[in-house]
Image 1 (cartoon, rainbow, N blue to C red):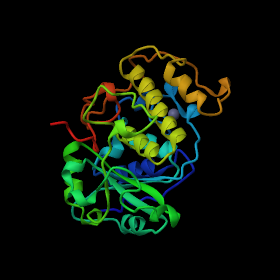
Image 2 (tube, helix red, strand yellow):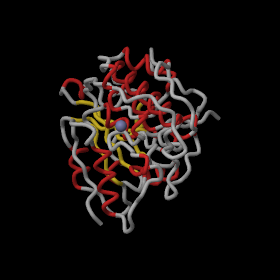
Image 3 (tube, rainbow, N blue to C red):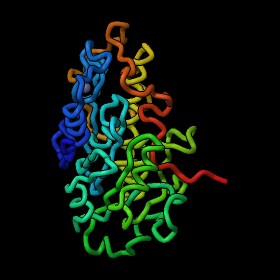
Length: 303
Ligand SMILES: [Zn+2]
């Protein structure tokens, strides 16, 4: 099985998830053709050209890092939101998960003393002594004093995949488990509160950034997801795209506005160019929390 390891990259869009996607495609025994690709999917954002969001991408510095451990076809899904994390968080890594093998680069990353890794997962699945609710509970101030940066390990896949990854990855067993409680994140409002039990992977990452005190990066990632979702749904549902939506304005307010000329012309999706879910991929079942399938870390379900 070819290596699926990737290194952190800051040049975008050639980032960790796009490289994992390429590696996964190369490992496929048959050609992978995404439906809608005939309309010209952008390699940078996975949307068709008329809906490209490349020119809108926020640029925010982040101290925290993200380590994505991804289910088998997760990186292939046009709706995967780990991709959006890699767009925004420069220090993002992505590894394909396997029960029988682990990439040495992943082990090295988790052991790198510049990082303090946290596995982000619901508390109920971990022994209580591993569970932390904030970034200082596990290490006291030791991590801060030694200059360690938080590294959020996110298990990106279906919920079933994520639980399997959590149970069957011995290299994660020694790490603190960060259990998210959005209501504890002061000053940060998760916009998509309709889904109480599951968050998209990028929403989880935004919450983690907020917990780490990186409010601007958290806001940027949340806005980036909203704008991506708006463009994605506009194509998928053949609906007009509002480039002045609240999400677009929120994203613009976070950083330099690209010149108007840099934006691709607005054009409604047509039947010929509209992207559809790939035949080879599961249907997205959660259009409201697009782009991800009911995803990994979720807050504990109230009794
Ligand atoms: Zn694009």
